[in-house]
Length: 165
Image 1 (cartoon, helix red, strand yellow):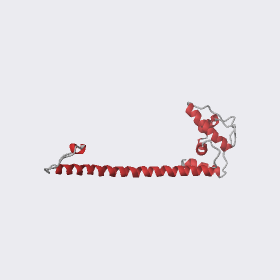
Image 2: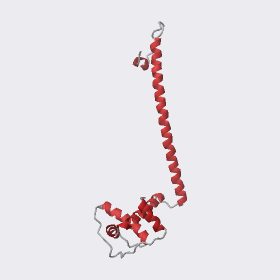
Image 3: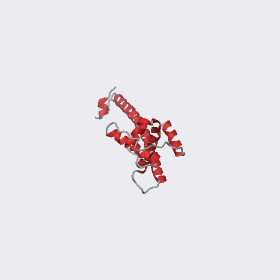
Image 4: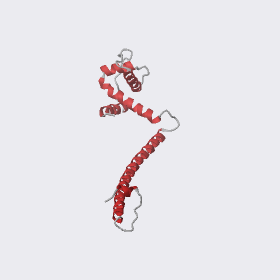
């Protein structure tokens, strides 16, 4: 939420009055495609909560957007809060808000733990790769030196065939 939206939302929740409108007169057609229509419909749901009026439509919000721009941050903020509440609940009714918050916290902790584990595993894999490369070099050098021995029989090993000094 942007600072201006947060400021207006906090003022509204603290009880500051919002201007009243004649919702039958304050309408404007929505310009744009289905995305604009959906956006104004979400904002209309927020406006219904702000003004406690179920007759507010998306065309009323379009009028506010054109003529009362200073009210948009509050409408957008309430819409964001409603969206967050909707996402939090996810359509279920079996859990309380505190249980949902706990589930989200546990999920986030597990996600962070997995990220840390993956970073550690990547570092371990990097060290193992370096160690194995060095072991291969040392083994190749060992076999190279052993070939100078008169009774040495080299093994048919891909490492021996691949590297020689």
